[in-house]
Amino acid sequence: MLVKELYLDSIRFEQSSLAHYIHHLLAEKKISLEENITELDFEQANHKKVAEMIENNVLGFHKICIYSLKMKPKEFVFIFAKNEQEAIQFYKKTFHQQPMNCHESLLDFEFTRGNGGISFREMRKEFESFPAIAGYFKRL
Picture 1: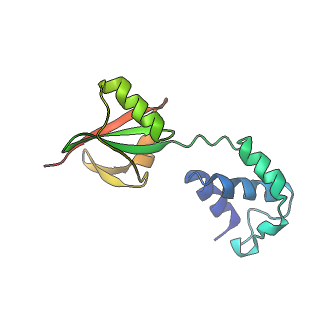
Picture 2: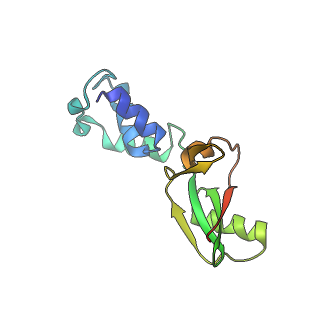
Picture 3: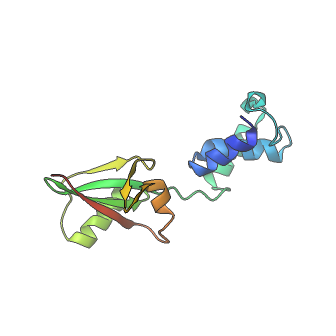
C-alpha cells in the first residue's frame, strides 16, 4: 500500500492522528505520497508539532458519529451527532422526553434503503448540519 492510499483512507475514516502525522511528514519532506507504507517512520516526526496540529485541527476534522437512541421497547431513532451528550440533548429537544438509552453505532454499518444498500457513513454526506435524525427502526 502506498502512503497516498493510507493518507486518503485516514481522512476518509476520520483517523485524525494518523492523517496529521502523515501530513506533517509530507510537509517536512520526510516521506512522499508514492512511497510504500513500510517506509513510514513516525519517529521522524516532531511529536510536539503534530500534537499542536491535532489540537488546532489543521486538517479540519469535524467528527460526526451515529447514535441509536431507544424510544420505546422496540423502537429506535438514529441520530448523527458529535457525541453522546449532543445526541441525547437533540433527542430531548425533538421528542420532549428522555431516551431509554443511547449507544454509538458503527458508521460503516450497511442496511437496505430503497432498492440498494447504504452505510451511515455514506448517508451522513446527505446532511448539511448536525445533529440530525438519520432514520427510525422498529423491531418486530
